[in-house]
Amino acid sequence: GESVGLHLPTLSVQEGDNSIINCAYSNSASDYFIWYKQESGKGPQFIIDIRSNMDKRQGQRVTVLLNKTVKHLSLQIAATQPGDSAVYFCAEITDYKLSFGAGTTVTVRA
Amino acid sequence: EAQVTQNPRYLITVTGKKLTVTCSQNMNHEYMSWYRQDPGLGLRQIYYSMNVEVTDKGDVPEGYKVSRKEKRNFPLILESPSPNQTSLYFCATGLAGGNEQFFGPGTRLTVL
Image (tube, rainbow over all chains, first blue to last red; front, side, top):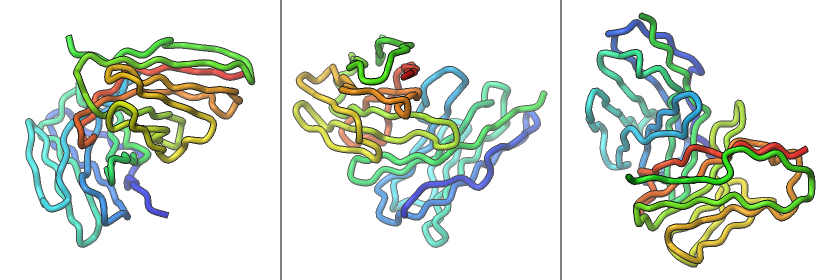
């Protein structure tokens, strides 16, 4: 069936380095692709989204890239900080229904 | 302060005892939704509502009911809870498109 998934369940990053979190999706009909961050004990927090007709979108310290040819989504975090330690979920929305991937746990090393 | 509130935050109950988890938002958002989060399965959408009196099923609606009688509230009802509904539940709200959602703090439910 159609699903949203992540390539790696965990990622360890040195503080100050750039992080890249990857996600593969299978539903070509999705309207938006979205990244959420979930810190321990909290609900998910919206980071950034990208419309399906775009290739790249930048936010504050984050960039989302969408490659529709290979159905791949990535989140780049510049100059990773300790506060970036969290679980990151990619998600897609189709006809108002939101589907999440399983998540990548990012750990930032001091 | 803009917020999404859920009550209760923690609940332990027994099989078959009806329960309601409330969700309220003060952001005047049209879109509201319920999710459950289970280890290894990520977040799965239970139900969503695009506006008052408009609700629709998500990916895992079985065993749940919702209602949207007013814009700010979107309660989740478990008529006859079962142990497989033990989970962490999140309510979320958003603007009409639903792509940017604001999540509540979560309700941890245990059904014995």
